[in-house]
Every structure is written in C-alpha cells, then in structure tokens.
Length: 152
Image 1 (cartoon, rainbow, N blue to C red):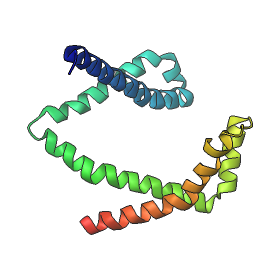
Image 2 (cartoon, one colour):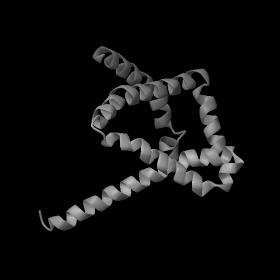
Image 3 (cartoon, helix red, strand yellow):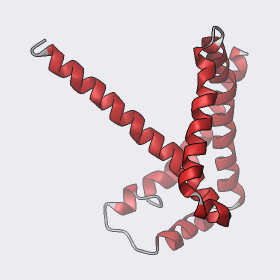
Image 4 (tube, helix red, strand yellow):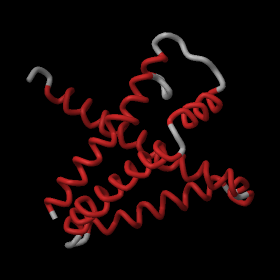
C-alpha cells in the first residue's frame, strides 16, 4: 500500500477520536441527569466528571486480569443481549400502550417546530421511523427472542 505508515497513523488517530467521542457521549448523559436532579452536583460538576471517569476506569481494570476475557465474554453473551432485548421489548410495549400518536405528539412538542419535506420521511416522527417502530421492530424482536431462546 502506498505510504502505509501515513495510513497507519491516520487509522490510529481515527480510533483515538472515535474513543474520545464515545467517552464524551457516555459521560455527558449521566452527568447531565445528575446535575439536573441534584444541586450539589451542579456546584461540583468537574469533580463529578472525574469521579465518573475514575469509576469507569477502575471497573475496566477487571478486563486486564486472567479472567478478564471470560468476564467480558459472559457479559457480552448474557447480559448485553438480554438487556437489549428487554429495552426493545419495552419500547414496543410503550408504543402499544401509550400509542404512537401520543408518542409522536410528545416528540413534536419537545422539538417545538415543524419539519420540511425530507423530515416527513426521516425525522424522529417521520413516516419511515413510525413504520419501523410500529411494524418492523415487533417482528425483529420476536425473531431475536425466538432464536436467542433456541440457542440457550
């Protein structure tokens, strides 16, 4: 490959930026929730961010032990897939019980603006998203649940 050292460097720089952007996303959500809920977290926002990063680092050190890969594999196979199935199942229950019309009315109220022609198809309350949540997601969850239980 032409100039492989440059491409190697750019690849690792890309991985670094992907990791940092993921870290910002993973840290910002709980920090925003804590600072909105508790006043003492607003005053100590920097220390809360450091504490959350430190706890994530210490929990990640388990992966460097001799059983680290085994623990990671068990979490990946059992906990994460089951949690994802339950979350999608809860989304479907919300769509059935609360109703898609009420759900999308709430999203429209939260955004407080109309959409253009492109947004009628792709936006959070567009036609493609509605069809995928109401029709496609239940079939995919049913298929995933059946195949997951057949594997067990």
